[in-house]
Picture 1 (cartoon, one colour):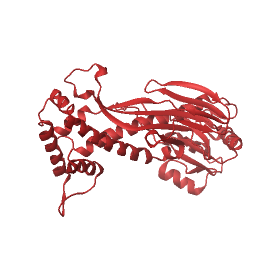
Picture 2: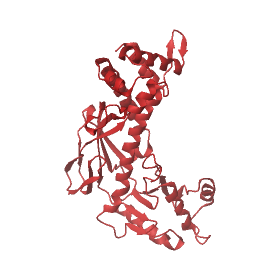
Picture 3: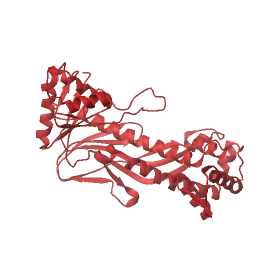
Picture 4: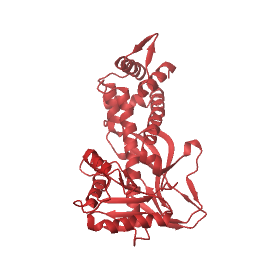
Length: 353
């Protein structure tokens, strides 16, 4: 592939100004140059059929085009994962492509190891490990269909930046959904629940019970704690103030409630919002349970383990049995693994139970 075209693909995807002498080329012009390259090199037109597009990308030049696209997508995915507060605070990452191992070592006794063993099937291995043990996060292949986006780009209905962004965002959402699910489901499998799990709608009468869970988590870990939940769940803490019957809420916090609907802290305990997200594009089911509050120790501890294969591949998914004319059979595939390793006792409050 021509170096100029390769650089154009990178610059366009990353929003970097593209110069023609001293003139900055518009995004529309750059997209036209890239489409023209595809048409001339791969023998395509904007009206090419799905079958013709498939055959073109199976040629050596088509393969080279995909290889550059794979590299660009990898960079965008990495940016998306790192730019996330939850990911950075509670997820320990290994990248196999950088030479990292897929196993983790702990000097502490592992309370619970809940490992994801099969992508999209939600099968788990539950085991106990002693101190001074290593544990391996199994990996699975995750796929995102991209065929329709390629066709829309060639037809001029989607630009190159949108194509790359769509795939990267789909992968970012996929893995973050897995991470949130792993994290939120871990509390249901805690071996010690007495004094660490509470139930019922929060009210002034429940304040002592809620405070006890916070206190127990703090004592078990000899640390401060943080209360985590969705915005909807955190708003339930406002009810602990009752109808003015308790005096723990400060005037500044009342202002915070008026402005955001969420208390900035609860008696000195920081509150951290877990972003809510829909499970799929149907917008019918939310991923994070808004009836749960997690009380977590503030320590150097990342319970969610994520192993990234570090390589994205664009392939024709022949094994799916799709018809020869279905462009949607192109997939971006990446091997990853997710596991929850609990070495610290934490708490949970079920608002609906």
